[in-house]
Image (cartoon, rainbow, N blue to C red; front, side, top):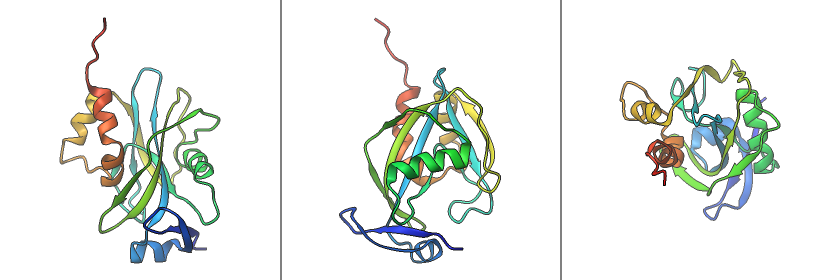
Length: 172
């Protein structure tokens, strides 16, 4: 069954719903979530999406996340997506500033979070085909490498945070 997705107006207010296939086909504005997962060593979890994903198939991604279903609270969607995609549950989520993203394939308001997780990662086989922890410095090198196609939305929304993590800090 085609899941119903919450649609948003230009001001970010829910204004209706549509089947996911219609939202994708017509590139309708919707709500989505993204969680940048780090471990206590400061590494970032990176994964590659399966070739069957409806948007950005086979791209690398720096965040777990997905669309907010019709009637679903965005925070509940964050928790659900993190569990579904990476098997991460019971983690403290830190809210980041919200953002907006639009291109010819996707158009949404993003609820952004980060978390620290040192437990096991369990991929949802329908969505994730590979994943690994990377240092921020190594990840920035991959973001700048055209042979590593990343999802443009999460790079636009969270790439500056990743680049900030890669910057050396002055220890006084």
